[in-house]
Length: 166
Image 1 (cartoon, rainbow, N blue to C red):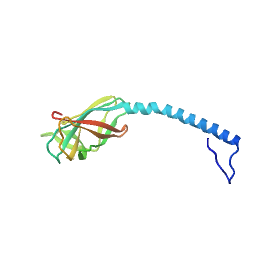
Image 2: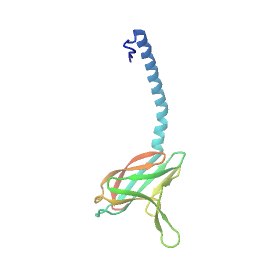
Image 3: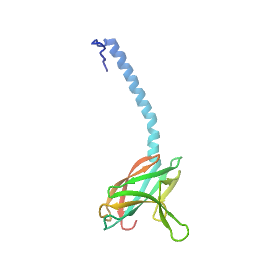
Image 4: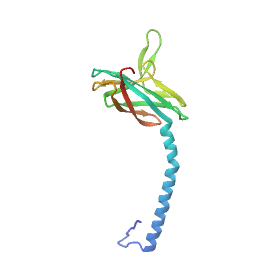
């Protein structure tokens, strides 16, 4: 119950009861709206899943390593990876591999497209994320949490495993 004083005078008992009923109705309305909106938010959260995220083990510090992963987008719209933040690297870049004339060449891109209703595999010879300037040695079996930021799905905290055979 909320009581409001105007010019030093408090509300009478009848006014407090009326305000209390209005507050209760408002609270019930907010709960109903929140319940109505929550399933959509929950569905959006599970519509895009990141699995099998991994980086190769390395004894060196200050090198660049590929971050590989599998992304399943069950949403009805395409999405895109905008950026990735990992605690063991200073920077990240999104890359693709061009296969024009001559040898394949890695090229930085603005975002990695994630088509709707498909599974996208980030791998060395296609779309992938390069983690630049590693800050520490990466030992086989270690696990880290990285943040993968999507255009529509938002930030997904993702467990990344260090593996000898990524």
